[in-house]
Image (cartoon, rainbow, N blue to C red; front, side):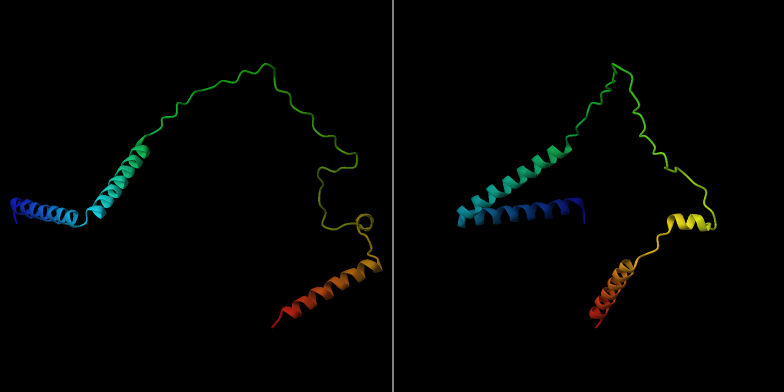
Length: 130
């Protein structure tokens, strides 16, 4: 097929489409006007959207230099308590004195409370089981 044939086919298709549009307009004037207005509005909105998106904002970067009237003051650090240990060397095993200092023997009330909490946990698990 040559180029003249392609252009001829396109021309015939456009003429046929134009004739169909004119025929539709003559039979349904009100609908044709509404469709034309809506299509024009949509095309206009698309053009405006493309135009607004294509505008590239060039933010002007300005270098604002800060001028200090006084030199900055470093706040004082909080006071460290007398018995506070910042770091320590760990040992593989504690001595009996160290263990006695940090270990608290639980009372009967604590043991009973822990036992009751464990029983409640076990009963919740058993109730949830199918």
